[in-house]
Amino acid sequence: MLGILFSDKECRELDYVLRKELDEMLLDLNDSRMDGEIKQAIAKRYKVIFRMYARIATPKELSRYALNIKVHR
Image (cartoon, rainbow, N blue to C red; front, top):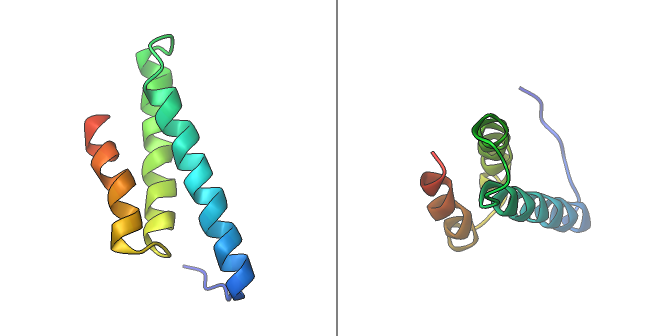
């Protein structure tokens, strides 16, 4: 396990980047043109990014993505 110190500005930027990545992956998971194998790989990556986001997000912000992760299992 690694520990990293972020300034407030860096933390906000990380929050933004993680949210945008989660949004993009949700779009890909809902794309009917993607086959099952690709969706599985995206879902696996989504779980990792979601756990990273969970460390810095408030419960209210996190709930937006937590509800969606169960849909794609």
